Length: 235
Image (tube, rainbow, N blue to C red):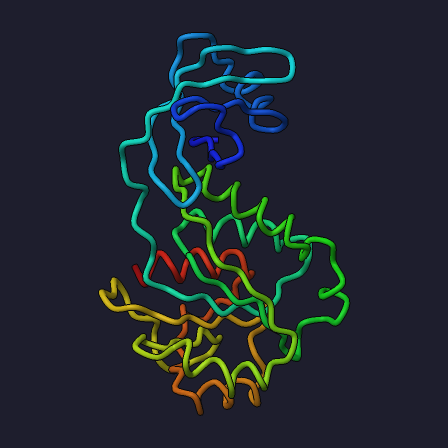
């Protein structure tokens, strides 16, 4: 935890917060903070700053906070991601959030197993928790918007053109003829399929709405690796 994310309900005064649960325990057990020490904090969707430890009890942690700095700038990217396997979903959300992604759509595809949509890891509370973990890692405060779409074709045909308007639309696909571009200065809508990629009919649907297939090379990567590699290359 490189930053403690604060929420409005944590404040007991204009400049004081009381933390409970996971965050308080992390400060006690991992930071091993003492009264008078200072920690990096930030208000959700707002500024970052410092928090001075005023009190540490068995159940609570009280800080005096001063929030005077902006969080890191977001990446100018919308991520369209075929729903990963449940056991990697948490890592993908946390990793993408830590890299600065602020808008994500988790979508269906032919190679996405139906059982994936039943995982409790898609519960809003879990998705929010993983996003918060990503913010803590990156010393960020801006929570991403993460939405799910279970029907591929209606999403691609009816919603995606408007989502991608004004951006460069890229489809990461194994075997694509064009290499993924580097160090872009424009906004991007990036579609990433399941392991093995989208099937050809899905690729064709995405191409019809303006997506350009690009490749990272001959290797087929795991989803969590591909997300990190693509974002690092694009920005």
